[in-house]
Each structure stands twice: as structure tokens, then as C-alpha cells.
Length: 252
Image (cartoon, rainbow, N blue to C red; front, top):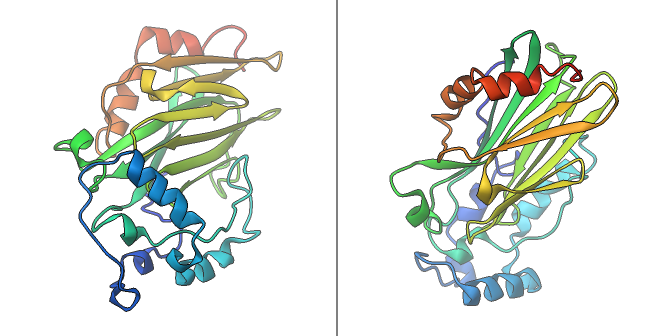
């Protein structure tokens, strides 16, 4: 599979969220911290139709019934204007993926990152973005023409919280996953109903077994970015414990 970097806001334009909103007389202040008061205001805005970005909502309607991108149907909800959280409070999302040979087995990798913005800049320090979820799945089949066996999407419509979801299909099973990172910096993932606290390791390895069961391995990876994720993946796939995990006698 070709390397993919997809800077998306639900795959549709999000520039409307950053347009000048002087007509609405919105108060825009730079955001340097995130706290409970801002969280409560954000939740209030969700329920206040005067704060919604109606242009974005109309654009998002094109996504209704667009197809399978993971365990959840893509929902189209009205959302508050991104600019209400401050100038540069959103700077994009992305994903990056690749296939690897680990011994004689094929492993599909997908990763998801959020761009440095006014809300997370203290955590990111000198980095331009941050990977919040990194998944490697052992598979016994690939679709190198249409890529219908491995799809994913990143979604910003919960800004300043962000989600990613996708799936990897083997010959006999489907690995569904969903992950999120919130404005507070906490991140979690669910993979076929197993819950992972990603604060204890962003890298998750999944090995389907011949009997239909699954095995997982969570790795305490370093801080990763869209620029370092490929090199890091290459390095861990050469580690003995990772090799043994994917090449176990009962793995597919």
C-alpha cells in the first residue's frame, strides 16, 4: 500500500469553520489552556443552534450513506463553529499507513495524528503534530487494487476532541477499531470490544489466531509524529518480541 497522509476534516472542507465570523459578532480569543469552564461552554454550544456552522452541516450531508469506514456509521450532526474556541484552535488531522512483511507474515499498519494547535501546543512542544493511535494488524489477505479490506477515517467534528476509526479484514474475520483523543490529552481505543487506555501505550498489535480468537500486545511507544511513524514501525517490526508475536504457531 502506498504511504498515505490524509489531512482531513471529515474529508470535506473545514475552511468554513475558520472564516471570518464578524457577521455573527463572535468573540474570538486565543486559547492557551483547556479547562472545565471551556468544556462546559463547548457542551452548551452544542445545544445552542445560534453557534452552529450551518455551511459545514450542509457540506457534511454529502457523507450520509457514503459507505463503510469502520464500526460506526458516519453521523452528520450540527456542530459549533470551530472558531468559537479561539484562533488556530484547529490545525488539522491526518492518517498514515503502510504494509509490512514480518518474517513470512503480512502486517497492516495504520496511524492517526492531530496537528499542533492553540489548545494542545503546550503538550506538543516543538512537534508539528502528534500520533494518538498506532495499530498493526496481522492479516492473511490484501486488496492492493481497491483497498476494500483496509479502510479508515479521521473525524474532527467533535472538535476539540478527535476520533479515528477503521477496519482490517482477513479471510475469515474483521478487525474493527475506534480511537479518540480529547482536549485534555487522554486517548483510548476499542478493538473488537477490547478497551485500550492509550495513555499507557499508543501502539497496539493485533494477531488473529487460527481458532478465531485474538491476541493483543500494547507497546509503550515514544512520542510519535507523522514524520517518525514509518521509521518507528520499521524498527519495532524487527524486534524479536514483535516477530514472535506475529509469527506464533497459532497465528493466521
